[in-house]
Image 1 (tube, rainbow, N blue to C red):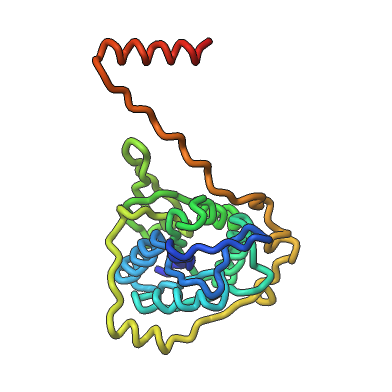
Image 2 (image 1 turned 135 degrees about the vertical axis):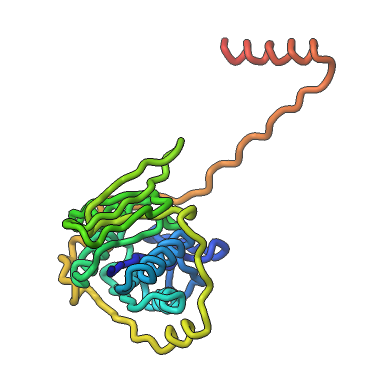
Length: 264
């Protein structure tokens, strides 16, 4: 079973910087980590590989420093890693980002399942995973909390997953290849082993630019993004509340009087 895991390197929560001209996150030279939800995606991919054999390919789009996230994924147990890096990708919104990732996945070609974290901690949109599935035209299941069964000996191959809902969950059977996004309830990510760290240090990371993906320039970056951040600002501080003191009867009367004044 071959799995592709899409990850993102995000700024450390204590070191977020914004480009005042483009209103986008500054990623180069900023202390970064693997997006927390993507750690669960990596772990689930490795567990499936260990159970059904095959390989795990981890892919990310970002500046050259994102190679550190890929090496960390290899240290955890991934087999291969692909870095998508090009100045043309800078400033891409979720639509353009999912397009780039989908073209890279189509170039990889040999896969049964794509796994993404449910959302990134810097954008919180939860749109990239579903966007990839839409671009490739794959069945998808979001907010997966458990993979129930995988049937690789049937035609077509299928996977059965539990999808988290607000008041419970639903059981879905989807044909492979497919895409799922996972929540933290799905597993407990492992720590890298010494052997994994040694492997990651020597691993050859595949690097693709847009010259390898051949996407039209008007579909990339800020110019190719249907959505753009117009303004970033700090929300106004909420007004402090009022504490009522005194006898209950007098306090209630005062409160009623203030409400009546507001309704006039």
